[in-house]
Each structure stands twice: as C-alpha cells, then as structure tokens.
Amino acid sequence: MTHPSFNRNKILRIANCVTALLLLMFFTNVAMADRFVIVNEKGEKREVIGRLHASGQGAYAIERPGGQMELVAQGAVTERDNTVPWKPATPEELALELSEEFGKDTFRSHLEGDFVVGLVLMDKLPKRSEIRVVAFMKKAAKFMNTVQNTFLKFAKKMKLNIKDPDYPLVLLIFESDDDFDAYAEKVTQGQGLSAGNISGFYNGLTNYLAIRMTECHTFEVPLHEAIHQQVYNRGVLKRLAPIPAWFNEGIASGFESNSDRISAGPTKVHQRYAKMAQTARQLTWRQLITDDQAFRGDVLAGEAYCHAWSMHWILVTKHAKQYTAYVKHLSEIEPFTKQDTAARQEEFIRYFGEDITALKKEFEQAILIAYRRRRKPPVKKERAGYLHAQRALADFELTAINRRDLGGLLEVEGRMRNINPFRSLSFSIVVITDAGVYAQWILPNVSSKQVVALSKKYADKVAPGVRSGSSNSFRVKVRSISPDSEEAARWKRGELPAPDAGR
Image 1 (cartoon, rainbow, N blue to C red):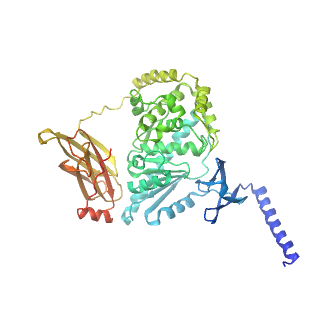
Image 2: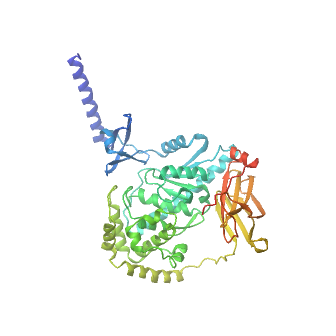
Image 3: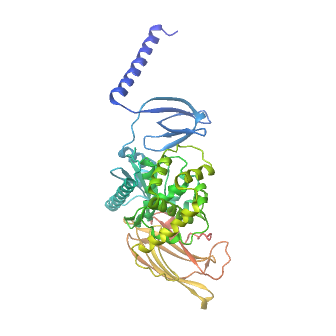
C-alpha cells in the first residue's frame, strides 16, 4: 500500500507545476498548444504536439510547429490537453527537418526573410558545384521576395485584410523530374491532375510550394503557386476551407511573369489568357461557379484556368467594392465546411448579381478594349514544324519536316542546351509522332550550359504496341539523369528507355 504522505507530496508537486505553468502563461503571454495522444488500428500510441486548426466531418486538422497540417480521425484521439507552450518552428529548424526528410547528401537550403528555399538534388553534388548551388538558391529566394512584395501591393490596393505568416514559407525545388513526380504522387495521393502534367503545386497540408527545377528558367509556375502560398499564409483564405476553385485559381493566374520579373498583376491584361478567352467555349461561367471538377482533370483544366482568370479580372477591374466584400466573405469560411452547388451560386449572386451571362458579356467588351490598348509584345512568327521549349532541364529547338518522298517519314534535327546551372547531365530526347513512330537521341554527358547538336534523324522506330503510319504531328519527351547513375550506365550499354506512345 502506498504511504499517504507520498500521495500528498505527489499532489503538491503536480499542483506546483500547474501553478508555475499558469504563472508563465499569465506573465509572458505564452500561447499554448495541445498534446494529442493518437491510437492506430494496432493499438499503438503516439503523441502529436500542435494547435487544433479545425475539426469536422469526423476529423481533426492539427497544425504542427512547422506549419504542416496532420489529419487524424477524431475517434483515434484518446487524450488531449492544452498544456504545451506553442512555439512555431524557426527557418533553421524547418531547414533541418527537410534535410532529414530528403537526405543530407541530396538536400541544400537557403534562408532569406520569410522563406526557406530547399533544393532536392538527384545525386550527390560535386564540391566544385556548391558555390553555384548557393547562387541558384539566392536567385530563387529573390524571386519569392519579389512575389511577396507584389502580392502585398495588390492586397493593399484591393483593401484586403492581411497578416504576417505564422511560419517560414517553404519552396522545394526538385532537380529530378522523377523525384518530383514521386513526391507529387505521394503528397496529392493521385487527386487532381496527373503528376506528369504538374509543373509545380502548393499543398495546403504541407504548406510547401514544390516545383520542377526546369520551371526556374521562366518562373511562370513558381509565380502562380507562390500566390497560392501567400493567399493562405496571409489570412486572405483559410487552409482546408472549401473555397471555389475559380476564385482560388483566378487570383493566382492574375499574376504574370517575364523571366524572373513580374510583369503584370490581376488588374492587368494577361496576354495568354486574354487571347484564349476569345475561343474558350467548352465551359460556362455558371458551371465553374458551382463545380470545381474541370480544374481537376487533364482535359478541361486549360480552359477552366482561362475562365477563372477572366472572371477574376472583370471583378477586380469593374466591381472592386463588391470584390473586396466577397473576399472578406470567403476569408470567413471555416475548414471542413460543407457547401452544395446551390449555396455557391447564391453567394456569388449575392455580391455580383444574378445575371451571370451579362457579367460575361461585360467581360468580353471590356477585355476587347483593354486588349487593344495593351502594349503589344513583339510578334513571334510561328513556323510549321518548329518547336522551342524547356523540359527536364533541357532547352531545345527542333525542326521537323514530313518527307512525303519517303512515305511520310518525319525528318527531325535541332539542338539543345543543358540549363542546369551547376551539373553535367545525361539526356534522352525522344520525338514521337501521332503515328507512334519515334526518333531518339542519347546524350551521355552534357556539361552545364553546354549546347549540343541534335543530328538529323528520321522517326522510323516503332513504339511498343503501336501500328505505324504517316505522321502529321509530334511531341517531345525529355529525361535527364545523373551521368554517374546506374541508369546512365545502362544507356551507355545500349539499353535505351522505350518511349511511351500514350497521348
């Protein structure tokens, strides 16, 4: 039997600890977090420290010190107490956490202002490249700060309520497309666009912005996704809230980049979307107001983004007062809230009127005038059979000719440049036609910034499982890997990657 004095002493110690904790909270105004005890299906327990971001639909969203959200079933939480001081992670702590996740040998970070720029490498880095990597990450951080300043100017102009971020903002850059695809599949769990069709994304659970390194050549995708990150970390919208996709994508699409500069904001004419809007007819504005599905598939997403920009532009430029009130309403929508299509339409009508068709006509007239008044960019003459693009860290130019005298064979030649600023790479470049025949170049070791010729070839190899025929169009698939990898060694032995003939 336990001695009575032991129980009294134990109780006194607990009381003293509680008193000390309460005094600490009172005198230092320390915010507190929850300690959750979670039990899995095997009966195993674990503790999670964080703040309760939201609860509903049978789940808790627990906000971790680094800004990540962890979703757990409410029934799995067996204990919960508000007894842990809350301390958001510092940039240094977050960088260390990411280094442990991706591996110290293949991860580098740069800290600047509100940002943690992380680079996930495809392989170990040669020592001579470290200085170039630092310069590359500094360039990315500079761009992210430019995005932030531009967004803050827009928010001030539109009188949006904003706050400072609660956590460092993370940008993850993946050198390898294969690593990016695997990460995107893991994080998105196959929801939305297929991983191969994603150039970058902001994830509301991790709070990270992840992009392919190739996108740092123009920064167009990083700009779009960085605006999402600003919106959800500046208090404009709440993470995990059911925000209409047309607004979410419309505000991000409003910012346009030119190389590493931001050339336009939501009140300006976006050159590409303004042109696309003239022929975009597969979706209606009413459909996008009530349904997000078009944004999640590979087929209609392009037009959905175009309409999202169009709707956002007309509201910002011609209905600014109503727009500000509508954004305030959106900012008050709680996470896990259920919304049906009728409610979304009613909310839109409440702020902008019930005649959505008239609003679209107003846009068509206004954009026509604005498009004519814009500063016209130099006209690029399109050449049949010519392609200039950047993929998988290759900047390439190709010219293709349909050789009728050779039975419709596609004759292709060109050149490519390794745009990786700090590493040599091995490249596989495949030109595959709509008939399923292809030409392939294997470039075993291309130095950083080196330009190499793609010698004249004919697309005469038949892709697996395809019946060949005459060729009318082509597409290009590029892979880049480390020259020291086992796969590169297989390429050298003649074991070449077979192209995917799928559209």
